Image 1 (cartoon, one colour):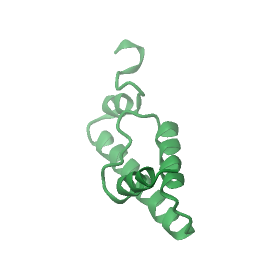
Image 2 (cartoon, rainbow, N blue to C red):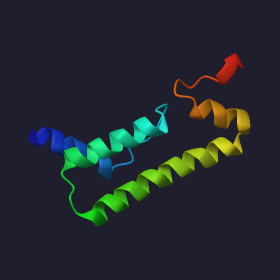
Image 3 (tube, rainbow, N blue to C red):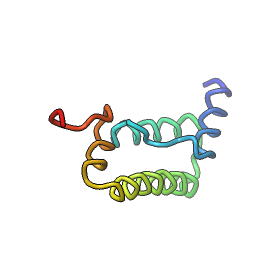
Length: 87
């Protein structure tokens, strides 16, 4: 594994640059575990801290969506950012 890949993964995990955006939760978590693997983090405490930070970011996005009403929450949870059923 190139050191650049490891450094990139660590940089992403150590900043606020990593967020769900329009990804599904499954894709977001898959990418998170890929970053953990690529970063070579092996200490369970570090992995727990990083996963807690990721969950806090998800919770914050859900809270913000709720503040703007249920239609905003549905739209923000859609993988492509569109509202379901053509609304």
